Image (cartoon, rainbow, N blue to C red; front, side, top):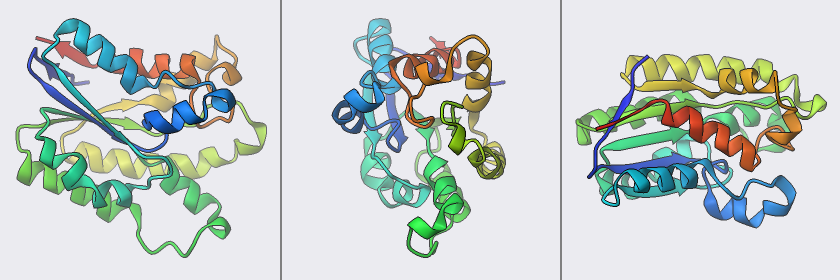
Length: 213
């Protein structure tokens, strides 16, 4: 298992969906109790390490992989990050799980995920990537069958990330371990969006992947 090197002048970009979206979690704080987003917690820790570390958080609720692809220039390439921490994929899987709720699936996940990595290699060749694999916490019994669909997407996402040399953190395994000692609803009331405690679990796991230099 590799690590991401962070030095005192690094620029870090967090990319993702609602789990990374600071405004969404603030707006929904009463319902999901997840105001202290993992990226905010990590930003504080990085700043404690060095005030010169720059952090940009670019999470947008309901994003699929193709949305991140569409905004990749503005929200990533233009910022010239040294480190990308990316958490994306659960909405792609959910859209597939309940297709009756969405328009026809015209923009599949894999080509866009591959293109993101192609652009990183071409335009940001020295940038390190930490890919946080999507997860579901077992807090809502009715959602448990979603694991099967999500696991299929997770395997495909992992394969692409590995092929492109990303450092990978399997958050599903992190939460499986945490659930052995912690009631799932304390980690994510709806099973998808972490509580403050759930976000801390992510932040702690990510920090273990960081090599401060």
